[in-house]
Image (tube, rainbow, N blue to C red; front, top):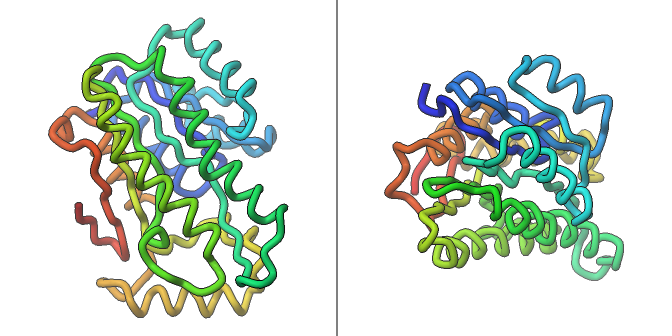
Length: 249
């Protein structure tokens, strides 16, 4: 029960890594986990499957007013936060030469600005000893073709972990990033890639991973839970890579 009594927020928790992390937080003793997402029905279904310690709050991380409403509810109900997992984001591919404003703005608004609003607006509620975990990706340091804007957003998230750790060291709040390898989640179905393209990408990712397979969302969730726990009180401003089941700082 490493997270016993903790109050947590997990954005983008309808499915995939966010949902798996919320479940792991609860299994490790978190008193309450607020989960967010834009699709009300899916969010409520996720909360119902997680049990009474999960609270669904429909919100869009790109809308500062939505984040204000989320944190106002937390303030009213429990008065503080211990853990923020800024996980909401999406992937979309487009080759250089066909980039559009819609593609660029969509990724930047969710994956970069959304992380900023999620973290900045949580600060008044975060207690000393709290933990902020950001969802980055190995694409932030690799050069997969056609993923330039998505990769750039994840590079920004990695930078946030290092700089925000310096910003918040005086408050004893840790900031770290998790950079998973390829994990098969429902989010991939919304990238715009065809089924054959996705299958080829997953096979390629498995071929270059240490364990010869893609990652699993529950493996990433365990890494996030470690960073959220007091056991990681010595880790801040770091990036943990979790690729094919192997985690390393």
